[in-house]
Image 1 (tube, rainbow, N blue to C red):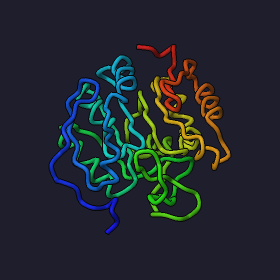
Image 2 (cartoon, one colour):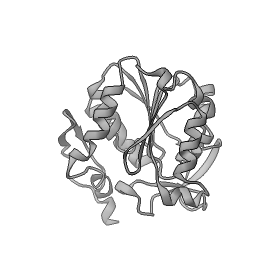
Image 3 (cartoon, rainbow, N blue to C red):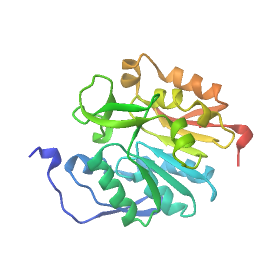
Length: 239
């Protein structure tokens, strides 16, 4: 058995992130590495999100992994609607477990998000931040369903987001390309995107193209809360 896939203790990890008490059960050492030793690295991100979000929001967590973002947001704002996207089967099981542990009622989607509907390889062998898998266009990896954000909103009866969080290792550019109607919608007022330079370069893109697309969709306030953590906001939809 791969060392990264060994089963750790079944006891949940209890911690406090940005003043919110949460707990997580992980299924492998790979997932455990996603839990940072210093939870303070989340403070700036969540403090900003807490200040921007309110009770009638619909929060999309794209690349939800084991559920850190959704669990913290859901515990802090239990009244909001949460939709999680996680294509990897084992990770998705951990996500569902952690949502239940933290009493978060969220819709969990089993697809990756890109710029077309179909199937794509989901590579778990390459190292990525936090040990996450990566959608790759080489054809190597676990085949997984892939959807555009626009088709999910149009065809699946999923509520339109007001706030989008994305950490999908380069596919953020294809998220934007396949979500033009969703991101342009007046109801989508806030987006937090983790940008990944090298994966973006493999797709012939860059963080500058990410920024330009966001601006074309009406996001006129862009700032990096950290080097690769981009906040985009529509000032006309503030509040």
